[in-house]
Length: 455
View 1 (cartoon, rainbow, N blue to C red):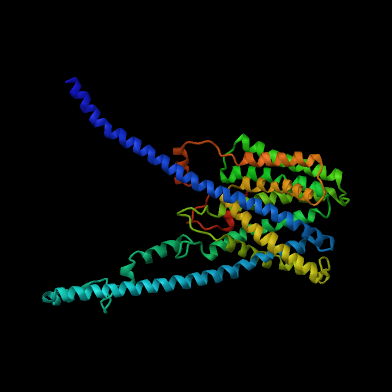
View 2: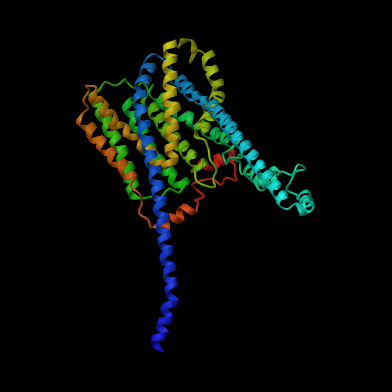
């Protein structure tokens, strides 16, 4: 009896254990696949960050020549940011051709479906001639057929209309993309902080030294980390904090080395310049956090948002909102437009297309592919890149430059070290959206949302 009971117990418990093993294997496989996808997304984001840092270094030479020519920081900021508007016609033309091709293939498929249906009906009638009257009567009474006997669009796609209505209620178009109005609202919220961050950064160079500007602007990494902890629910680790401080410290070391080996302009009003640098760092932290909070993570169920369209509306609002300010400054002869030469205009436009339109698009994509802290602190890798460029051009950096560059690289690597977690926890985190990370698609961003996000 005991052996029979044990065998019966084994036979009943074996299926359960097998199911448990299969479930754990399935969970591990899902986690492995998810980790592989996230790793590729993360690597792509890092590639974007390196590309942005390289573009900024190349564009800095153009900016330096334009500023030395007497062009005001406001005009540079206004013209370069307004160039984002070129994205709007590009997106609209691309979507027009995409829609035309999609409609062509849809009509072609519908014609094929109708011809196949008619062939099937004729074949049925020929095979069942004796019951032809009954078949015709049934076809006439069918609610999913048109008078000609072909399937109507509603019959082919019974839930298409309901799906379109549901997507519209979520601020999505028929293809699951964010509507223009929804993207424009987010751009309008981010626009003031975007403009002020760049304006105060450029303006601070008029009153303080480059060394002070670089040191104080590097605090944006710490500001972004703190803001992300509060509003985005980013995981706090001592490793991240130390890594951010290493990036800041490395930048400070390099700046101090530059100040001891190069001649800087005399600061006319260092207190005001330092204050503007801190304001720029704060605005940078605010608008990068708003982008990460208001735009989705490109995951299923949240809708697709075009980053190019977002930047296009950003440039449009920049052009409209700050045009009155530019006109007032021009007529008051504080920032006259007529002083600009065609060569300076060409340099500004070229800088704007390369340094603003292209690099900011790549940077914004990097924010969505990684995190705000990684994207912000990661841009400090331009410090060692600049040191390499100086070495290749015959201007060997100071020893402190290499020390600072090493600190930046170590800090950047530390920020990208993932926090250890189990496959089940990672899978649960992926399957359960965090409310603080991504807004509910059913709630469109409004001006009140913007004030709540930064207050």
